[in-house]
Amino acid sequence: MNLTVKNASFSYDKKEEPILKNISFELFGGEKMAIMGQNGAGKTTLLRCLCGFLKWDSGSAMIGDMDLRKEKSENLFKVISYVPQNKVSPPDLSVYDMIVMGRSGNISIFSLPGAKDKEAAENVIERFSLGHIANKSCSELSGGQYQMVLIARAIVNYPKVLILDEPESNLDYQNQLLVLETIDSLSKEGISCIFNTHFPGNAVRWADKALMIAMDGSYIFDDIKKVITEDNIRRFYGIDACIGSIKGEYGEYMDIIPIKRNQ
Amino acid sequence: MSTFKYNSSRFGLTAKVLLLLFPVVIFITGLCVGRIAISPNEVFVALGRFLTGEEANGMNDAIIRSMRLPRLLLAALAGAGLSVSGAIFQGLFSNPLATPDTLGVASGSGFGAVLAMLIGFNMTGIQILAVLFGISAVILTALFGKKAPDGRINMVLAGIMVGSLFSALISLVKFTADTESQLPAITYWLLGGMDSAGFGTLMLGAPPIIICLIFFYLIRYRTNLLPLQEDEAKSMGVNIKNLRSVCIICATMITASCVSMCGQVGWVGLIVPHFCRMLFGSNNVKLIPASISVGAGFMMIVDTLARTVSPKEIPISVLTAIIGAPFFILMLRKKGGKNI
Image (spheres, chains in turn orange, green):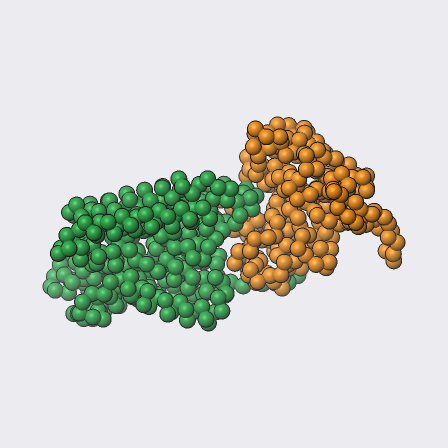
């Protein structure tokens, strides 16, 4: 399904300049979009607006023909799934219970999870090969394992759009690749994925589109290869960087090396 | 090709049967023991006569009907109620140190009760004032604590403030009270005890506890969402604000009703849920029923000890701490703090 945002603005303090100004972008089913920018530029704010945790001041946001600004959250989260940043300590629930919890929106307040909910969870557990830790408490998992559990919990609802807050932060190479490969394979099934990242190298390798936000609220949205340029890195991150291609066994890949801060 | 098997062994049939039997066995034992021992057979006969509405016949009937039965019922309700509201508050604030008193309910109720004693109200008056002040304390806490991005830590801080405010007011009442008659009564009452129990007290105090316990039992799966971050919980498609408010209201009703009947009973709301977590894990589907059963049983044991081990009745909160603290530390060492 297409996600279309038009002229959307948001400010925390309505008297001040908006932190997100007239954002417009369109994402097609199965596309991956990276949101980039400095700390405090509004990446997380944008994600939170897309999920409806924060209300846009103006503009429109649609998924297919569903109006994100007006839809009730219980319907909204049948289409969107949100993967929170993996930074607070995980609750002491088993991996299995945690993944079943993703179905909460389908379980009425007085009910327990039904056969359908359990089956959905078991399918995801098998797909992500989490069987060996399914009965373990989330509080005993490594960072990489817990991130995969959070993604598993998000897709147990068969979403059309997956929104991830810094999914590969705080992970080692192995787990970064595991998470990014998972996002890639989900997008191949038609799920649109939107994620924040502090790693332009990961974005250029894995994303199709990029939305880069500057501290003054301006932004650019385009194909990832067009967004990652030395000029843009200078403008949006305030640093000088070298961008080039590295040739290796697996072909030619683009990378970005930060050189020095601009004064 | 199923690669894993969901491990439900920790809450299998054996555990369920034991949890069901535990409070029943304690209840029957509690009816039997005391200064005058009554054999189980006689207890069943007397209970049968009571349940079929027959006239009381003999001393056994009198002891059971007017003393042991209401006491044990009150102990069971208070134990189950305080344990479940403790478990709920620990989830709500995702803080293992939360207790039923975190929002200042118990201090507020305590103040209401001692104020009623100072004025000279009867038991009904004490109960009503205790519940009213308990609820007021939580409303105060909610008003002070709500203005914050993630209001939970502010709620806890506001609760501590409101709690200490009402503790100070309790001291003020004690200070003003008549040292010959009122002060000892107030002091004993604050230490907690089931001796006020009678069917009159229960008629007023039991229904809110029972209703809220049934409610928590029914929504026990949904309460698993309480510890999640606000955004995370919202993204489950659930109205987390309403859920939190309803849980605070019900846990407050339970705690205020308990304090209104048996004074400030400490520790139960902390020990029992943690003990159950160590045995059955943190999933509220298991934790809530386990807390009801273990809480009720534990409190009946404590009350039975309170009225049997020494000629003078020992205050409940003294016993809960003396039994609870070492037992809890032992469990903690054995489990290495896992599941806490």
